[in-house]
Length: 308
Image (cartoon, rainbow, N blue to C red; front, side, top):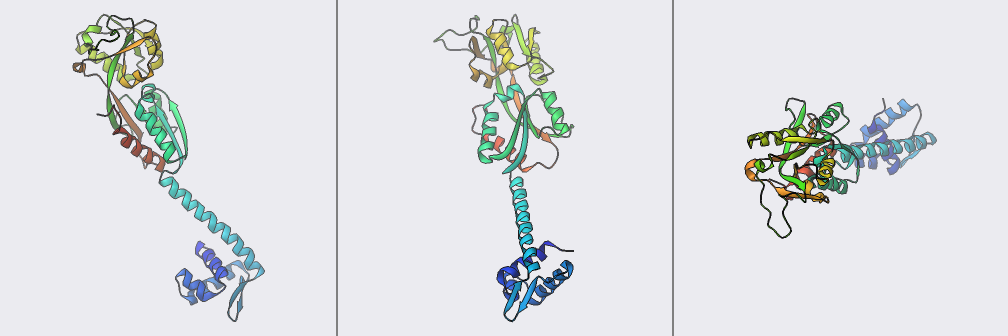
């Protein structure tokens, strides 16, 4: 059976034109090299080299063999280099999912941008969906990693890292009595002040974590929120708020959208309403691209306003 070392031996002998010099270059003794070349010729069924008084030269069959051997060795080197680049996260592919609220957090956009700048040869697939859909796609292998707001059971065959906790804000129509007039210093809103308001929430199947947190906080403040609308997307929530159809509670990063007709107020810290951000991937050996992305997420986290 021909092995890669036989190909390297033949190419080196052809380059050097001399068995002893080829052996020195290969780091082996001359007699074993001559034996391996003779064994290779026996396998091929033809003489590859003419033995000369002061060296060797290729036969016609040898030139054909060495030409093909060079191509094979080059392809092997390319395969090894590509594999190492993949392990380092320099190439390959990565499918990243995120919920609509996570999509607007600066950490997410910053991490994806940094990954693209660090490893431009990685093919990125980005998908926005609800937390349950993202988790299902992680299990099925359609996604490699997801950034979600809702807690995920630890026994689900996934690795879950809580990246940060983000403050929540009240989003209300800019003509609402609680909205701060221009020039006035804003004050935190007590959750109990919202007891008589109509709430607009992101529908629970899409974001059960934030939905349940808001309901629980309202109950702890002494009232059950009157839910007037449930929107399929967070942007839809803000559109309904701008239309004067109710108020909502959103992650602080969404206020960066500066939607016309919407005012944002901080909640009193005693409301203890936070929007967590989780990084989730399958509990298996991560690819180089995934490992690099996770490292970038943790590194980018330290420089962001919303880090805790």
